[in-house]
Structure formats: C-alpha cells, structure tokens
Length: 561
Ligand code: CAO
Image 1: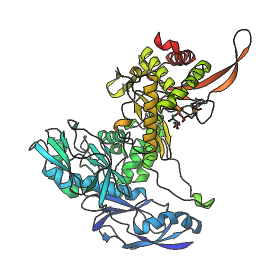
Image 2 (image 1 turned 90 degrees about the vertical axis):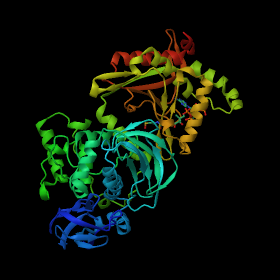
Image 3 (image 1 turned 180 degrees about the vertical axis):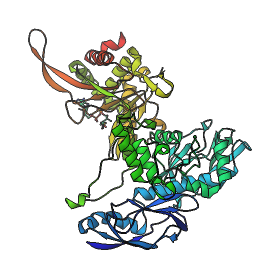
Image 4 (image 1 turned 135 degrees about the vertical axis):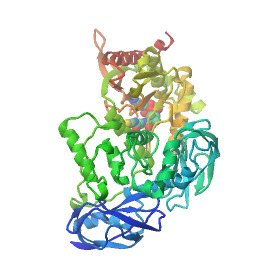
C-alpha cells in the first residue's frame, strides 16, 4: 500500500474551475479514472477522474470551492500492485491528462463548447441570417491542430453543431462543430492543413433553422449551458452517426431536451450513456442537484435488461459493460493510446455488429482456369507495372453479381422504412496497414477493365499503406471485398461494412480433389464467405449470389453473357 496525492489535472485551457459535485467520500474505494469531482469552468462541466485505483483517505475540498491546475484535493491509498500498473497512466497524469479519456473529453468539450458559447449565440441564426465566418474555436490548450478530415463540402447544408472538420492535436482528435445552421458557401482549408485558434476556415450562409437552440442559449447564458447537459435523443443519435467517419467528440451541453426536461450529467456519463444507448431523459440522477452519475446510467441499463424492455433509443443494445480487471495483478502491462484508425474501426465494427443481423454464406469457386489465365497475364502486368492478383477478378465477379441481384446494392433507411437502391457500383477493398484496417473504394467497377481495376487497387493499397488516403478515397462503397487469401485461412465471417448490406471475404485458395463424375480431379478451390444483413437479404438470395460468383470465377465467359 502507498499513499498518493490527488491533484487537479491540466484544465484544458481554463484558469480555474468550481467544484459542482463531490462524487466520493473518505473511505470510498475507487477504480482508476472513476469520477471523483465534477468541475465546472465557464465553458464546460467535466469530471475529474481518480489517478489510480485505491481508497480515498482524505478529502480537502467541498462543493463550491474554486480549484486551479495542480491543487491538492485529497489523498488516496493505492494498492502496491495497482500503483505500478497505473504508473503508466499516472506519469501522463502528472503533466497532463492527455492520454486519459477524461482529458480527451475535457479538451473536446472545451473546443466544442467554445465554438458554441458567445460566438454562436450572438450570431443566432434565423434572427439575423447573412454570411458568417467559420472560425477555429479555442483549442483546449493546443497551440495548433492538423485537419485530419474535412467532413463537408461547399453547398452542403448543416445544422448548428454538425461536425465540419476533424482536428488532431498531439493529444486528442476532436470534431469542429458548425457554429450555426446554414449552408457552407466557402471552404478555405483541406486535409493536412494546420490551424490555430481563430483561423477562418470558410463561410456559412446562416439560415433560419436551428435559431431556437441558439437563441435559447443566448438567453440562458453560458453558465446555464455548462450546467445542463444536452442529452436529447436526436443529439445522441447524431453523435453516434458521426462515429461512422470520425471520432466521437464530447459535445457541449445544450440547455434543454426537446421534451423540455433538463438533464444534468457530465461528459463521461454522457459517453457511457451513448455507449449503452441509454436515454438520459429517462435516468434518475442521484448526484448533487439531481446530476446523473455513472452508477445511475448503469442501474438504468440493468433495469432495462431485467425488465426485458426493447433496445434503448439510438440503436444501442443496452448491453452491460465488460469490466476491466487490474491486469497488473497478473503480470506486467502497458497502456497505449489507440490510433485514429483503430478507434474508428472499433466504433464501426461495434456499431455494425450491434445493428446488423449477420448471416454468413459459404461457397467455393473452382479457380483453376482463372489462375492459369492470371498467370498468363503476369508478364504483361510486369510490363505495365501492375501486379495481376486475384483481386480485380473478384471485383469484376462481384460487380456482375451485384447487377444480377440488385438487392445486394442497397442501404436500409429504417427510420423512414425505405430501401435505398443504388444505381452505381463502387466497391470497397479492405486493406491491412501497419496502422490498422482501412477500406479505400474503387468506383464504377462495372465499367472498368481488369487491368484498370488491378492498377487502381494497387494504387489505393499503396496510398493506404502510406497513409495518403483522403476521405473521398474511402467513401461511397456499395459493397466490400476483404481478401485474406494472400495470408491464409480456410473461411471467416466478415462483419458487414454497414450501411452496406453485404461483404465478401476470400480465403486462401488451395488444391483439392474434386469429383468430376468419374474420378477425382486436382482443382484449385477458392473459399468464399459472404456475410449479409438479413434485414435486407434473404438466405436464398445469398446462396444465389455466391453460386453466381462461384460460376463466374469458375468460367470468366459468364461475364460476357
Ligand atoms: N488464394 C491464394 N492466393 C492468393 C489469394 C487467394 N485467395 N489472394 C491473393 N493471393 C496471392 C496473390 O495472387 C499474390 O500471389 P503472387 O505474388 O504469386 O501473385 C499473393 O497472394 C499476395 O497478394 P496481395 O495480398 O499482395 O494482393 P491482393 O491483390 O490479393 O490483395 C489487399 C490486396 C490489399 C486486399 C491485401 O494486400 C490485403 O491487405 N489483405 C488484407 C485485408 C484484410 O485485412 N482483411 C480483413 C478485414 S476484417 O478484419
């Protein structure tokens, strides 16, 4: 056992904060990163996490106290083993809370809140209209940030707070929200640019929509904004949707939910609520002034599960959290921040896994002749500077199957009970890179030759590995191919890249004895795994699709029929 001081971490730019909630008492046992205090600056309400797991032995502060960075708030007794495991974290905590999720939220909340506070309110859309400069808000302590994603284009209509840019500092990735509702009329920036606070990134023609929210903020004032938490289902949905293409940024707090009920909760609690799909409006807060605490959300989710009620709003499944033990009690461990690609992949996979009823259809294609054909063209490929692999043939066969069975080239709009049929054929290719999985998209596969497809696949895979893909390179796919054939394996069950409705996995082709009616023949057999969204596609159609794929890959003449 050892004693450890509990000090206020870096405050993301704020000079001082007020304690609006003391969430623990002397004698309480806490896990690392459990919220200890709720702190309020003039911009946001954040939770101060425990620096380590242990027992609170002293608390020197009270609600209403004002704190600065580095102030001592109390002491805790940490278990020896736990202390060493947490030392990775504590190291970071000493100088900044940069690596901890709580810190990310502080910064994100700051950046987002800043963009809203004052500026937005004074430019209340609908009250004045006209053009408004879109400026980089305060960056929560970061001197400059890099644009890692431009999420809108000129002409796009946006709502106040819709994410416009994805910005990365050396500590966190945050989304820069739109200051108002309107139409983007100018964009002066591109991916890779470096920005500082106050830089103008473009212009917005402010429209009438969204005026209410902003003007309401004006009247309620900054303090009010920071004190109440926006947890409207629509807002949470939007945040979940953003996760498709960007990291989830903690958003500033809006005063009231559409039903008019005020919700009080900190950013960490809102994050948990989003993860669980919990509607904070329905959660009873047990904290000071009725604030919703983590435990309240967990208790609400437990109750939902016990009562067997349907999935909470926002598409979440209300699943219980997986508890993380203190692994350091079992051996040496170290923590590493996930890369942006890893974070996005985790979000995307989880979202698809929870929302899509998956089924995987297996098939084998006899590619003996195709392989001979491919090999015949390898030399020509070398002359052209293109590596002729199986992949472009798979793309072409998929394009043919998508045209034959258009129910695979759709997305579902469940909110409007509609099926969106696509009349174009863009195919995503899963590419394994040292930084994680990315999916560049090849457009109009149905209209391109095998050579063109091979060339483009090679170029995009190269860009993926060099981290040069743009958002445009990775958007618009109708269907995805994931090929593990160059690596190994006999079959797998890929996860649908939702909102697409199907994905084809290819495993390693192998020579197998195939009965031709009279004797066994050695044939090169390619294992195919088609995962599909059973809401959009019937099992019979999936079997038809893979049968056609198998036939096409077995005899390329099918393509000209
Ligand atoms: N069976 C047997 N051999 C295969 C094969 C298959 N299904 N697919 C490819 N090969 C061969 C290729 O023909 C090539 O052999 P040669 O050098 O003799 O021509 C070799 O394996 C290496 O191919 P490649 O991987 O360089 O090229 P590719 O066009 O087949 O694949 C790409 C390109 C980008 C899809 C691949 O490099 C890749 O990243 N795959 C991993 C995708 C992934 O991680 N998916 C998982 C997503 S879900 O977690």
